[in-house]
Image 1: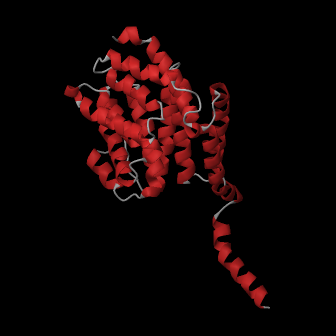
Image 2: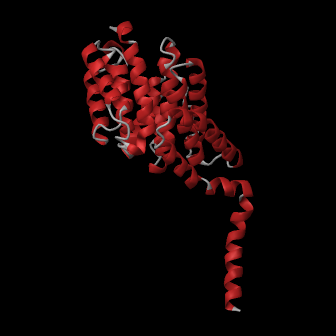
Image 3: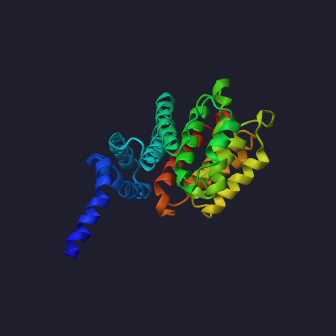
Length: 290
């Protein structure tokens, strides 16, 4: 009789939760851990063609789960990260317009993730002070949403450098990253430092750039992984050395990336393979820049 009473009590406690969640929502929420495992497996992939073919299906799977649970911040942040990674790794060098659309899609998912944490302002029109106030309340759980929203947004701006309206939004992206730095400075293998390396290196000093700060942040990003994450050197060459016209350093950094052996950083080998591909493209354009 006591066992029966306990079972009834448990059922009564579960009924409100079961009533509030559809079967689709339950499946979506239980899939988050599986999605994390899928991301880890993809990061270890060494075959770029296989990764490029597989990622779109994974993105559509995430979108399908979001359709069942539209305010799930983990799924929304995963979508923002996925669209960023696919656009940067496989699309941007060949089709900038398509890459911009993919970054915009990731940005939209990122904004939805932040809204699920209570950030109910229009990021694109709000002034930086208002953004600071909105994100100051967020804790570590919101770090992925903050980081990937800012990353997708910043890449849209990067692809539209001749648009003053877009350039004016760059400071707003920085406020999201600043909050990540307060909460988890080493997030995503030093992604905060990598962001600031590009942020300060991609512009001339008269336009807000600071080459010394850029170099300092690229060094900090490298320190997080002991130099094993090759995209750091690629972005330093692309955004800092090219801007300050240091051809020797540009060539040296990219050559080091290409000569780095496969398997040097197994848990991020896909990103390193993307870095090698991007380094080869940038070296092929060296004569056009110097």
